[in-house]
Length: 406
Image 1: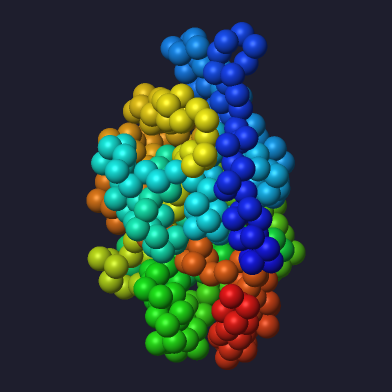
Image 2: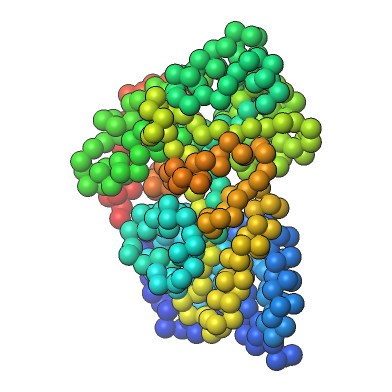
């Protein structure tokens, strides 16, 4: 499949001058902004409208189709590349970047205004010297907690793994549920997996695994042990409830903590506008200096390498990156800024500010794991069977299968 995509992309490049939008009949230049987040469509449309008022000779068409990644790859195969693209930092972006679809921003002055950790994430994932996009917004995977219940139980935010488990023990002893697990949806098993894997073996593991210096069996036993430990503090139905159930239950105070990303906060507050939520970095180890916040590029901005409207398209990206526009976006979307000096002031995530300000950030471990492995299903199966040896063996076996197909 990967070879097929590469062949399609190679065939695309000579004919790619047909890409993107063109000049409209009114004499205005029309550019397309293709982005993958349905929940951000309205926010980006407001920003595009503001841009058009400031630049009356440019029309911006915001495209947000369902299943955006599939649509984008299909369009590329048909020599139809949007001018400006908003994408997650994921396997699809990496594949397209490696095949020369996106412009190179390595020498763009805008990169000086971006948190270095996020620029490094692009380089690490693509393995390229070039930087084929500018990080715009960031998300975070931490521990949500009910501030009122923490206060009621006399709890303080834990900084180490032992403190974390001690807090869970106190909650359990008080007759309350420490964590509301939602493992009916396999992807939610990756929340604690990423927090542990990103901080314990770290992303260097994947380079060593690829070169044959180590294996999951050798490096991931502590991750597996701690994954199982967290199961002890859930409900009686850890695998019968999904993400939506968890949001609703946490909103009603059914658990004191919730292992989920900050993207869940708007949904929780819809269910209970009065809830006081806090968020702290997952303390994966007992070394506070090594416990980093798991955070990734939620949206990065890039250009088609072959756009006929490079000047207008770049002008739109520069507009989006203005601090006041970044602030507008993150306030509406409840995410963090990749741009230096633009802060998220929502009290629900105030405990994470220090991590962002000091750059104590680490990327999601599953970003380095080939999607063909279906690691979410592997993790879900492990948590159900609780067989560590089989789990670690499966991770190695599936990794090897993918590498052999390259």
